[in-house]
Length: 143
Image 1 (cartoon, helix red, strand yellow):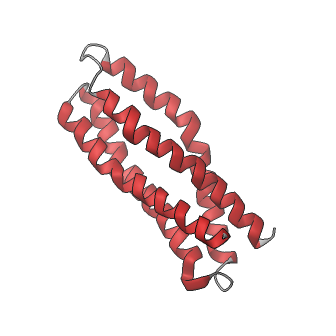
Image 2 (cartoon, one colour; image 1 turned 90 degrees about the horizontal axis):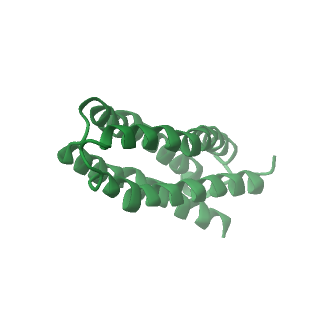
């Protein structure tokens, strides 16, 4: 596969996931606070299950393509950009599993809790900004 095609595939996945995370950040997570306490467990369970359909496979593919790009672009792309791009994906995965998932687990176990929802929203900015930075970096590489 050509480096240009690999960059385009990375860019396409980053664009999809960046759009998705911005939707989650400004629409979905803030909406958690609007759901009644009695309905929240069912709502959160449905949200978590349905989000996994649209985020899990693209994230796995993005990780694989980012690793491939890091290796294939190591000498061809400027300033270690391919490794920075890969590092941002690893960062997103780390925040997802060590920060976001524990917040979701708390919501699943305890139900509605505004402080947990607020913590989820605040810490999700890490993923939102990392994916946005990756998209910008890949766009710059494609110029």
